[in-house]
Image 1 (cartoon, rainbow, N blue to C red):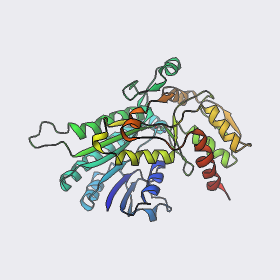
Image 2 (image 1 turned 90 degrees about the horizontal axis):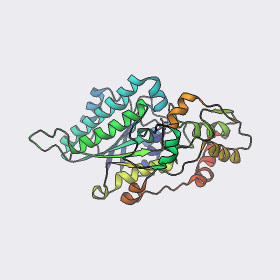
Image 3 (image 1 turned 135 degrees about the vertical axis):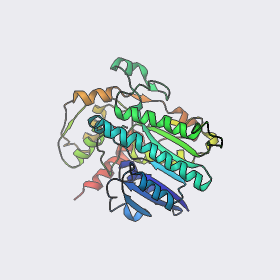
Image 4 (image 1 turned 120 degrees about the horizontal axis):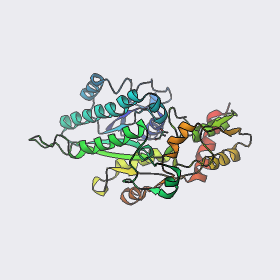
Length: 337
Ligand code: SER
């Protein structure tokens, strides 16, 4: 039996991850979220806790109760919300991650073994200065353009470094060995599109919002220009990437942080696919110049060759399959009355 802690369990990735992990009969899930866990997920978890990752007493009591094998630390404020509440974002995204890493250290000491710590980072860690540079940059590699322009991107980039610090250099002056406590592994996700949930507070939200609005017969005003291009991935692939990275033998991993991606359509191309499935879709492009700037600073594509080489990453869904076999049937089922 493996015991797994998932923070941000009620979020989009949490929904997908819990559903997939619950298929395994040797897994016991402890789900933590600020909001009460959705009723549909409750039967899939061992315990659902409504609470705050900033509540260290709560984390300590969890740590005293369970021996966690793996922590999926998904809780975060996304980029648009973080821009509106930067101090809160910093608290949740950075202090929250620090609390979870400290909890993992405590767990490691109690259990006398390494604790796996899976961390979803983001394309928001990249920051390209202008559209010409973005066009020239093409597929961005993990070490390039690490000059984020958003609180969220800065938080994610810093927490990647924090995770590496805990894995490799934590308390390096101490007499006793302090390495080998945390096995930190991070993925830089592109925009994610789910058929079953809609995101809140992100800036890549235009793609899922457009699809979910069309499926409900609602008009949608897209907040970015038609030519806006960033990488995306279907949610089942995002969940699969987390599970595959978790399962990869450590000696195969040449880095702590990996890009992953599946396709990178423009907003117009997304609209074309949405309109193909829902011919009555009413979409207008009315860019919000401020949110546009954020998306324009994110790369048009990322190079995920390290993930492909080290742990055989390969998305199951390309753009066409994502729409035809997952997104369209999924939203049709979701909104059927
Ligand atoms: N989807 C996220 C956002 O838009 C990016 O990681 O904030």
